[in-house]
Image (cartoon, rainbow, N blue to C red; front, side):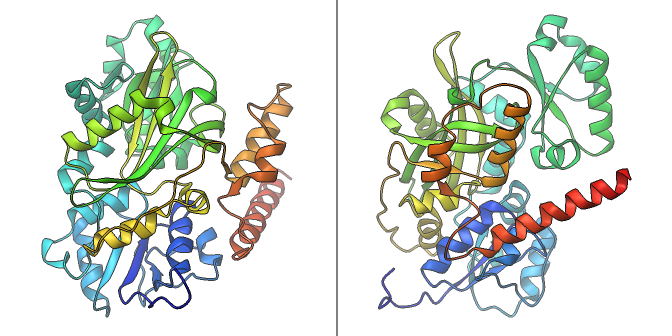
Length: 397
């Protein structure tokens, strides 16, 4: 937005606390949107120069009634809701309909969200639509593991129905079974924490076999800002989160783009999306792995690349014409500094070369955390990491 452009009148309520909402906050602040972060947090976003919170905050929830009661209590005439986690997306989808004019959101409806974030329902959906996907089996309890042969068990992994909760307790987005007994133990441990699983076939191949497709579907069903990226590295090395990626031409993965387009149309999707595929060299297909109905961790780096997805989502929520946007250039690199540093250090420690380019990515890549115009989140993250290391050191001694 040019300096002479009018300041948007409607505020934005950002629901989330990590890298994705930080990217959304930075993007909208550049357009002088008044942004308020709903979730009470001391995470990196709280150090941003643009961080503000409403008079009251709300802990992350998927409870629509809790969000409804919270929104009713706010002394805000109107604000766009921008949920940045699966739980927040669910809460927005489940909130009272009579608040939707006062607090509009371009997020998908309740039934759509629930079938996308529920791994079992999502597996059934893509199977029904004939979209290539890995073999998936619902694991309701340890007894369901009996349906898998030892060979199947060894070639797949336990994928949590809530990857956020699993990562919080176990540090990864899933669990490999080193034995049948270990698989039973993990299912039982996770069940005690309210975490369920599906079993999914593991597609072999390097990180570069995985691609990520982002964009926005507006209220008319039109797709805007479609971008495609290829993974360079992730942390942890298996079942981790992307730590570095590189832009590619969507046409170079046309089968995956066709699957995305068909899936979005079939479920009448609306909103931001982040969809992961992995190329299976065994049959030559890009198979869908995950659908995130929200802004991704790399929203800020995609904005740096010229595709301003939060600004598009803000317009669509207010039922305004969605502005045109640039294209994410093939060869453009992005990284999350902490995750990628860990991925590189682990590879070196294990005596192997990190996948993909290191120097070029760090010198030329768009950073998810450190921005010259907003440096404090990176500094806050470094200080928090140092405090964690000191606490661990003291606990051992």
